Image 1 (cartoon, rainbow, N blue to C red):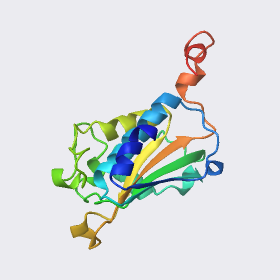
Image 2 (image 1 turned 180 degrees about the horizontal axis):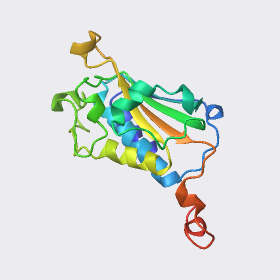
Image 3 (image 1 turned 60 degrees about the vertical axis):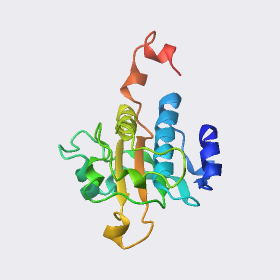
Length: 195
């Protein structure tokens, strides 16, 4: 969050993190997870007006408590391999920005898909631009590589919701008890080379 501190200050954006006590231990590639969060925070900054708020929350959830209908929007091919009985860390990156249209919502994790209008990407003088549509696709790959899921929530744009800043939440779901396949490699391979 240090590399983003200048834009947060310039745009008078409030960034709030859930207390660390709320975060259960997680077996993950720290560099990749850091990259995913940086991409999510950059995205939230682009879509949040000056003086807005971005919040990162976390909670432990059981797979059976997840919003199945909502997940199906992002996984039209099904979730047959998902372990519903396991415990997960759900991390939410929420903002009170411009929101995500109902048309864009199911597509935002697709490669090369850039949602929204260019003028809605930032109210600041810097850090503008729609980008190449790779940030959220990369976040999805990182989370999937850890055996998790991603999805988004939004009431829509201001026109759709009737609210000036409807905002959005990106949900990341990481397994708590499961070890990703990369960490189950035999001695002498990945396990000994990467933390």
